Length: 274
Image (cartoon, rainbow, N blue to C red; front, side, top):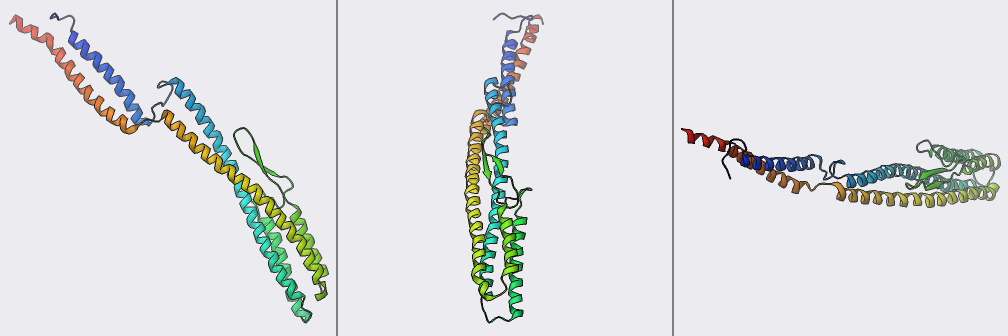
């Protein structure tokens, strides 16, 4: 290689190597800082486009998860109210058995009747309080639907406003008709009708709520799997990238030193003129 003060070939080679190292260092540093192998379209346009589509699906599934969670909550609140009503019906049965005792005094009968009135009133309270997020299946006339997947499929919790009317009717019947021990059969029959309705609604709510819970569990698993797939597509191996970063930093220092040495080479020609 000719000695020249016009063209420093060694410096050009060192500079080219330094530029290449710096470019690799920029890429690796970005991966370490962001945690992504593909952070934007400049990294890999095709992969980034696919990743953005997957991210959009994940956002859509988040809305589905929220809707199903609302359905699950409403179903649980309704089931709790129905369980409470069923327990109250059992308590009322016990009071009816007391009222069937013909040896009760008038005052004792009034006490038991008042107890039953309070229990029946509590049934109405449970019905009125079975609300979740502004919805009440036991008082509304319109069924409530929830989004089940990103295609728009829905699941429904049906309303049962007939229970409130049945409870009010039973309360009226009891107040006006159960005044003596001989009224036991008709009273227990009326209560049995209300109990059958509560059991029927409970079974319906349980079945529909189970469908919502199962779908929610499936969507949760689907979102988790989708996120794992997205991570495999765009996430960086930070441990490996950190090791590469250190290696590139050492190479950068060596390139700088090589460039410095190459830049000193023309100065050696001055010694020829001394």
